[in-house]
Image (cartoon, rainbow, N blue to C red; front, side):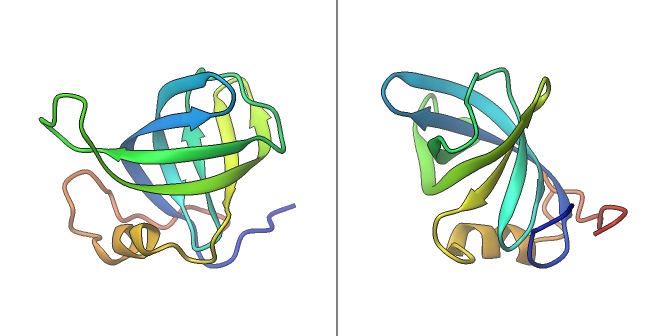
Length: 112
């Protein structure tokens, strides 16, 4: 059952993922909504894990942009679904406002 608020928007954005104690990896946000997102990654996190996402900046040589904290709410072999710790984080609102961004398709996903 879908529990997210708002419509899911297709997105393709690189993020750095950090979870305690020592889980660090990379992933791609594949869809986003006001309450959460789906992240494609091979980082093994379990439901309930707290994860910090940092947007990767193109050409930044490891430097990263703004970050968001979220909880893992579901997992499968392709990645995991998260729910934001803060309602509608500013960075998410920016992603949702930029449908013309070349890294974002701006497509509403079926069933949203």
